[in-house]
Length: 199
Image (cartoon, rainbow, N blue to C red; front, side, top):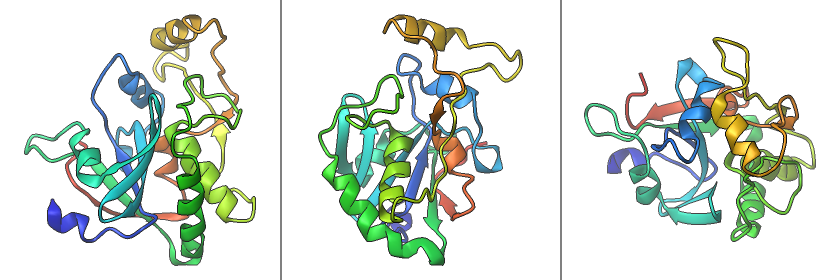
């Protein structure tokens, strides 16, 4: 795994499968699949050989890459289910500005309701907004309508109904937003390697 880390470059995106039902990871994976059908519920921005910036509850923070990998679901061999992707060459000039912008948001609260305000961030929103800023206000990763529906029945998943009821809010089905699995399929990215097997 250490050898794989040395292959990463600043600005690479690390798409992850995280454990836990209470945090909603399983429900996040249910509504959208990533590249090659991978089940992805989180994304972090690789900064350097020691750090990843991510938005997780309770706030945006910077953690050692080893800690990021250790927070993953593991495959049968014990390797973390993390997919590394890199911006294609024509977009790599955006990376330094995107990293600087993401670093400015360290300490900001986690965006629990996935709303459109800019006083808090969830994982894929941080990536979308950082690279939009770096690309002179033009979306590099397009926002997409948020989806909270069970793909087999077409109705809202019970988890999300209860989640938003707990905040006294309606489920924002169809509102603008983003999803880490959807980001993994972006045309501006190319997959590098997976630390572990997703399927």
